Amino acid sequence: MDILSVKNLSKIYEDKVVLNKVNLSIGSGEFVALNGENGAGKSTTLQCIMGMTIKDSGEIYVSQYNMDKNPIEAKKIIGFSPDEPFLYPYLSGVEHLKLWAGFRNLNQEDIEYGINLLNDLGLGTKDLNNFTSTYSKGMRQKIGFIGSIFHRPNLIILDEPFTAMDQKSTDTAIQMLKSFKQDGCSILFSSHQQEIKDQLADRFLILKDGDIH
Image (cartoon, rainbow, N blue to C red; front, side, top):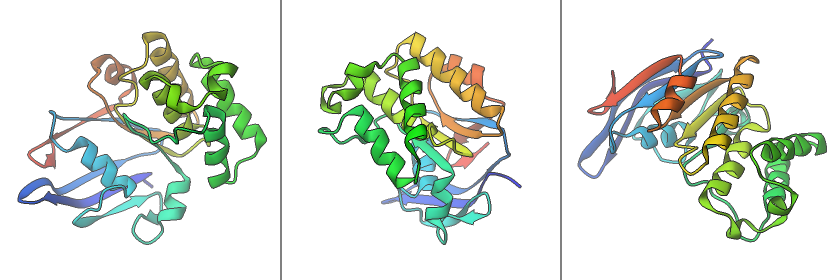
């Protein structure tokens, strides 16, 4: 069974057809890059899959779950990280991990796992105890990225997740994702950084004129 199946996904903004009956599927353990020019609809596609943008038509399945009928169950097995992760300015990095862990019924061991991953990305104890309002964009991306993977999801969706990270952190994040693949995790991601696509993608999808090519 595919971990992700998108059927006839359409989205119209005012008079512009951004997505026109898009179909795509991702198998278990498959890493897929979503390519396209600026404004092609890559972010819209990913946001529609996550339910963050309301689609006009189409069906989205994550494993056996229909995202319209079983969104809570579906999102339990997804991790999502955008270019600009939403963080509460007056919570620390650690407090965000604890908050997300609470949403997912994770335990202290899972939180420690997330902290260790953040340490690997160069965020130390002092950084993680500071309010995220003091963070650079790169630090915010690190928190958002680890927040999307520390619950060990079946499907990870990433929208330009590493644009502000330094090269060392990006390389470390890529190795983290590769290790997840060994456990059967799948990834759908968008990135303008060709070297990241070359290192991660098993398959490339091109979004053009509202459809997948």
